[in-house]
Length: 167
Image 1 (spheres, rainbow, N blue to C red):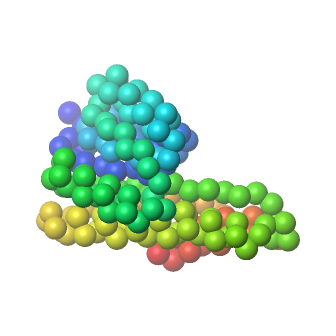
Image 2: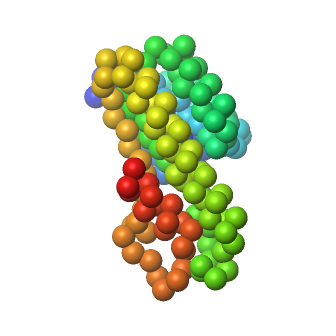
Image 3: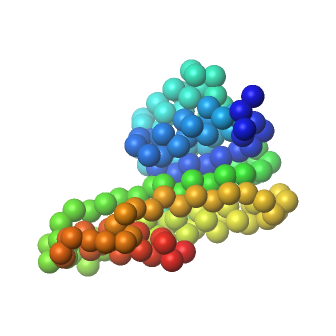
């Protein structure tokens, strides 16, 4: 028996790294985990590994910068599980290079995934959690870059993580 038995968790960016580790830990504690990532092979492998270890997991490949996908994602969670207890907003990109080297378009793309898409997931999670008893936990994965930056480097990523902190 885990401390999350009977709960449903959704993790974005769950194909690898921090997102995959979060999904594995949530499943190990008994949560049914919905893993979301753009790369179908990675997210499917992560879900398969959780199931092989005895956990409950489903892979949902897709792009959370697509508003229609996000809406369908959360509608699907409601239809299949009847609830959402935990959202881990982890998906993100970290473009490298200093401010002088990064284009305005790179900033737009970074903000679109790291802030706007996260906000869309946050909003849908709040609506679903409120509809099912007004309870739940939302974890937004930030960065130390929220607090500092090297001289002129990492401007787009830092800006996105600072915006996340504000949300």
